[in-house]
Structure formats: structure tokens, C-alpha cells
Length: 65
Image (cartoon, rainbow, N blue to C red; front, side, top):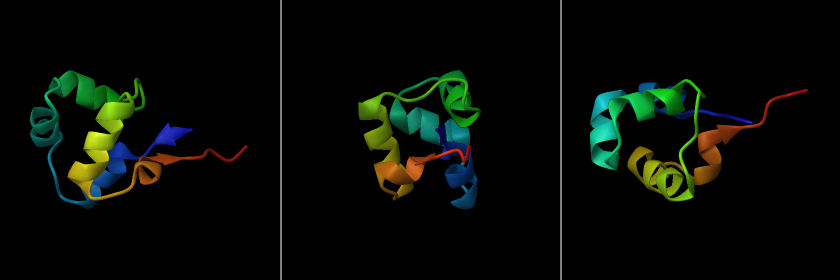
């Protein structure tokens, strides 16, 4: 699985630094999430889904084998 955070942020016309600040994480941490280097924990995923107006399931997509 990989996340769709970068896609969702861009689709809504938001800035990564704005979301990072609202979530209380560094811009580097948020950038790592967007690039699938690391993933937000469960609570952060919930908070992010609310900020983006999507379900937690919408934050990830299954990779086809």
C-alpha cells in the first residue's frame, strides 16, 4: 500500500507547509509522508483525513501486483 496524501493535498489546492503547521508536525515530516518515505500514525491519519475532508480509507491505495 502507498498513501495518496500528496495527490489529495494538490487536488484541494493546499500547501504542504500549511497542513504540516495545522497538524503540529515539521514540514520535513509532512514531506516524508507525501513522498511515501514514512507514514503518519493512526491518530495523525485521522486528523489528516478530517483536514482534507476524506475518509481514512481515501488516504491509501492498494498497489496492484
